[in-house]
Length: 326
Image (cartoon, rainbow, N blue to C red; front, side):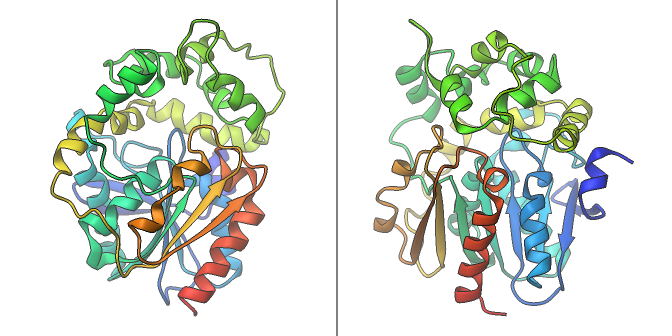
């Protein structure tokens, strides 16, 4: 049995939006379900602690491997990973489950997708939880051009735009890549900071320079690491990187979307020591969201649902019990 299968509920599959989507489901099929949406480089497995907590609380919860990841399909073509496809997959999952509305909880890239759902599919959204990822207003210019101007060519999102380059670099030693990323806040801060004369957020250069024998600040147990490594060795990183290759396309397509979220309960959970998605990025969300609560998880870096699972579980379940009582 794979490391992944040993640590997760039985995998299920749904034919949605032209792909085969793998997902994990716990709890009774009653009430409003919560759908957990992962980021990069992650999997439904990133939500293992939250699935267990929801199950114990008698809550219906679902975590999919999203398009390009894990046991879900990886279609060819960058354009197949734009926001229309990513949100459409989640709506297709609701249709498969026979659900009109769900609470969507997204972390990292999953958070970007989750916050777009009330703008693109408001009639299918019961509530939104952003974990680390805030609601970001539409940029005044192409985001990639903006990032290139501010951070340079080596900034990881700009670097990801080059076909095949980052895919090969991350895939050369998947164990090293996952251990490099999945570290505690102090180590991630070091990776973000630019070397002398270098570029901020130059994760490609930082990964290449990192000594794999450095076992300090590791976040995952050997079994947890194995689940990620075996998954990305099988899938490669291209599907996930393709999400980043649609920043410009998504920006162009979003010109006429609503700019506010009204009438939908929203909850923003921030992580004190996330240097990629800092709590300061959530400032001003109140101005464009009519129903918003905020909470801060102390001492947590970027991988909050895996770093501080008990705190994240407590916050999510408390909010659900108040806003969506069983």
